[in-house]
Image (cartoon, rainbow, N blue to C red; front, top):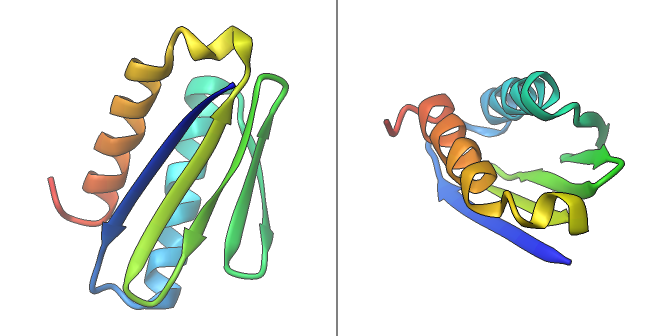
Length: 93
């Protein structure tokens, strides 16, 4: 199993960051068929070939995704797309 871990600081506050996490999850749903559900301040992500979470804090967002065998070969483009989406959402792009 291959893993992706991305962490970024932000100054949006918790509620705004939660909204940005939802936007990122919507993009993952559109691009890769990933579903999501809130569990506290964590947005749990699931797919038949991957699972993980977006952890939202007052000043940071952390994305952890474990890719199954089918998606492991696509790790680099998946990670790049997530990083671009996160940076755009946080106003860092």
